[in-house]
Image 1: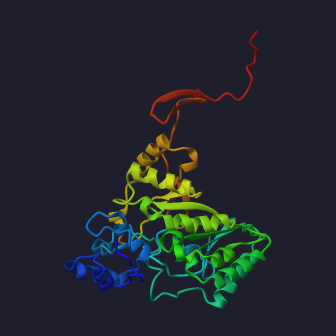
Image 2: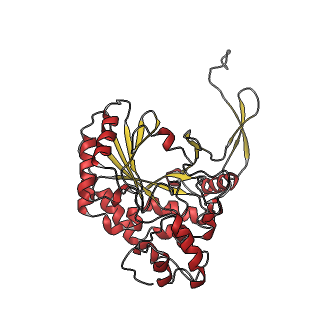
Image 3: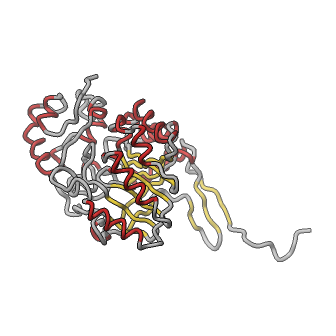
Length: 359
């Protein structure tokens, strides 16, 4: 295994590292001119350059197909901008908001739904004035119960900056939950230091970190140890993954991923259907394929290890579960219920005692 000492951020970096062939240099440069590139040492070391279908490379190494845009794809596929009343805030649901602290990431995913909004050339983080206005927005709305800190990747910020945000939100009485969405524990586990864990911790709020990982190989021993530092420091963890063609669109890979999360004390939370981000069609599955995979997982895994399969409806209409339906209405109060082996069973709603009691 090659030891990498720094993040790879240019086409020449990828070529020098042996991750792309010289013959691809032109097309990689064309993609890199449009979309950001970054592969941390932790992820670069996992890539098998001899495997053209390597699932780690497929997530992070540019592909010329990213330059082909389907008419249905959109630079803002889930409508963040439509629900952004002030810079940094996305208010799509009544009881929670996104607070987008940063516009940079330690790695850039080739399927990112915010790929037009993040990376070099974008504002790295909210300015002091923008952050103050975003916090004022939260303070002024008592219905906001949860703040989801995202970006970019907010855990790329310094512990000092993270501590300042934690303290500011800690002073807002009606906010009860802070949820940080990040890839850092797996792609840059060395950043999860004692100082960062302390910066995330709050005496007055419940704090979660939602770890984004898509393949079990990403959950290395170093990632496990980073998660252990967070959890032992009082931070609860959940997972989110994206269903991706050629990366995790088979039951064996998803099963291994979800089991590994649970073994690391990370509760599987969401399996996202791929968003309609520009240049990502080659990485999306069909919804029917996703439903079949969820049905296979239910036959293999306990409920503790099952994520919810969701779709973010384009146009800022929010997430909805799109998993398979096991309940089939027949007539009246009767149903046919499908078990994990796809066998059907009759069931009838009984909600009141019979008019005449049995002797």
